[in-house]
Length: 259
Image (cartoon, rainbow, N blue to C red; front, side):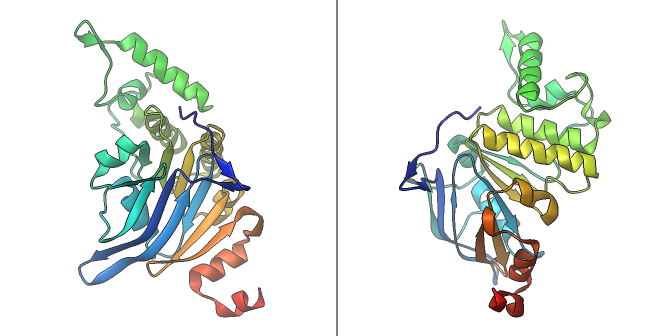
């Protein structure tokens, strides 16, 4: 798990990652237009916006799926290039996509260690993997009866929890969550929100793309609003209201002028 502390200078956190003037095109369509954003350890940032606003495209820039045509990226103060998902992972960034990418026919242990299995004397070290899997779930406060349960038998909330646990096995500094509350019931949403707060407590920087405003606002430190490829607002926790965020998303001048 990430254990580094956050540096604070004159009351301002030093970001672990800074993205500056990020622009991305798909053919003749500009999906991102000069977007700036800082990510700090122990901070939950929620990206919101209408469909096609650019929030998922921006998340994919951080994860290495999309390569920007313009812009600069800094990690721990050093300029870096993210040309693919491996570059992102090597920096300490883990991504949990909306489809979760779990194998339903494999159990929890097998899903957590898929592609990075532990071996001993040329054979799979099932005992160590099972122990580490259980320890990881416990640290995240995830209650599942058995780490040998098949992924296909888990609830939506449990599947999301396993996907987050898999990301945490890499001891990341930043975790990206793409629509983590989609298609979940109320109790499962609350469970995932609790997991997000747990990541913050472990000093992980968390970036969440979500349409579920009411659910994620209580757990976030900052809301970043995208509209038509631009970052139009960055709202700190104390100033977040549903009315203001919706006004920023839609460009409702009447509400914003009243502010």
